Amino acid sequence: MKIFLDTANIEEIKEANSWGIISGVTTNPSLIAVEGRDFKEVVSEICKIVNGPISAEAVCMEAPKIIEEARVLAKWHPNIVVKIPIMPEGLKAVKVLSSEGIKTNVTLVFSLNQAVMAALAGASFVSPFVGRIDDSSWDGFTLIRELVPVFDHYGFETEIIAASIRHPLHAVEAAKAGSHIATIPFKVLKQMITHPLTDIGIKRFLDDWAKVPKKQAVKS
Ligand code: G3P
Image (cartoon, rainbow, N blue to C red; front, side, top):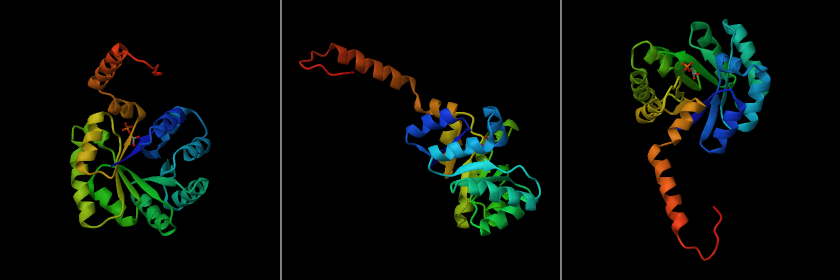
């Protein structure tokens, strides 16, 4: 499973990228708004840091305008993927954009039918929002577990991004379900790398190492 970072924060992206595990970044209007900076400026900066698909969301609601907006976004950098909500106007836009070679990430997906339609229209990525499904008292990963074999069966090239990940167990479920990608907030990524037994183990090794007689000084 590939890991994308779900944030528009440059410091977080730089740090996570330095760990060597990030294959892409997803943003949305809410994440951009948190940064309080110009949209193009932030997205262009992200493209310079991470060499992989960078999702930037279109905010127009009619197909001709979405297409126009997407063409502009796609010119910012070759790695830009245009995020488009699942809706009839969105599908029309995805169809045209995919024929032009512009990559799309169909977002706000909450059902198998929505995901299949996005794939049929030619979406490069589809983003089921597992956390928000959980919020509605349903299991977000039931959807991912259903989607993976359906996409495999029909040979769809569209990659599934488990999105709206809220905690480390969501990332575990995404991997177990066979999601191609999980897009993860930096806070959750940090939680995923830590374990109390790792901390205790490191401390014990260092304490024991301090007791070892050393003929030659080793820097620690
Ligand atoms: O990738 C989608 C994500 O940004 C939405 O997350 O937590 O707002 O549901 P959330």
